[in-house]
Length: 551
Image (cartoon, rainbow, N blue to C red; front, side, top):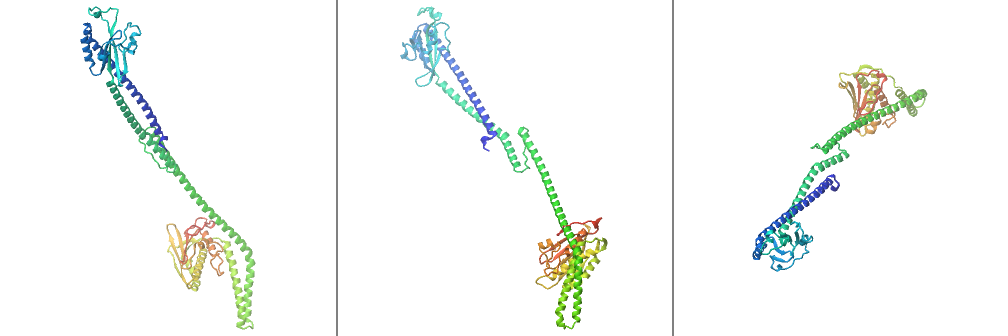
């Protein structure tokens, strides 16, 4: 903002203009009063000088001693400040003068000094000395004060024998005294100069004081208010103005501070509400996604259940017939007259037919198991026997793939669960782990599979860790391993239902599962079961997610 547009500048300009006008008027009035007083003193002094000259020459005139009068006039005319002294008669003839060339000359009766008396026919009353004074400019340019003093016909003069005048004459002549005003003008000029300097100094002092007052009392607080408002406008609500006064600006600053405090508090509340709302939206979004996934799972389960129930009987009977007749034909071929080499191709084809028919039957069986989701029979059991039974069942399969099995279990291994279903989950994880170590590229079959259980007393949960040294999984594989029909087996052996079935079992047990796996670094499944199932657990389900979230 330009300074000429500010309130402080306008206030300073107003105060400066008013004080300048006032000081100029005061200075002018003071000069006029001083000049008037000085001129009055000068005129009074001139009157006294004139009276003194008249008194000094009176005796000589009474005795008609012109030489004495000339001497007195010459002496008085030489005094500093007196320009000249003249005495002329009533007719205007100069009788005595400090200038010898003026004697016997006639003055102008129409002059300004003569008009005041002669315009009235020389009638009484005689004009005052003020009316008989005049100021004029001399030839060299300085001013001169001229004073006309009438010489009255006194009784002593009218009765004197020397030059008696009739008593009817009131004025016998005129004393004209001219005094220089050069020194007076110099003093008045010096006084005006001093007064002008004093006035300018006073104006500068008033301007400085008023400017400083406006700067510190008005402009600085207003600038702080403007800066504070700009900071608040830009979003900085922690602005606080220092209030050192109790005037209107101080009250405004205090109101500003109160406003910023209220705005800051309101913003904190709004921010807290928005964060809470955002978190609630996230939680609800997670719940909706979880519900959506559950709905999709339910729909898949329902579809698979309908499909499995409708086709299981239709497929099992033909498949069983195929397997039976393949075995009968194999026996007939063995008892036929064909030689071993001739019968071998037939026997291999028949064996392949039977194996494939059995595999189809297993697929239908897994579909039925996945779709039924039979109820859970909870009971409190020790986990160690369940793990041992799993190892016993998978021991032969592990030896075939050169996999070493390791187990460990916590002493406090009591768990409320369905042991058969927990065994099914562990068997599914162990089968995948053994096959993953058997398919490790660039090395022979083999590895280590460890199953361990530990107690988390703080959370009152029991954790089962299934760790292998196999292929490992990338992020994309981990994101889909619990989806039905998703498999990484490329030889057609996998259906992709084992982990999906395990997922459902964990869900019914209110358990969580965490998968930690890196490509080439093996995989660790962490199953976390509540030691004690909640009330009505058989009718409850919980959501599941990978990487430590509940399922």
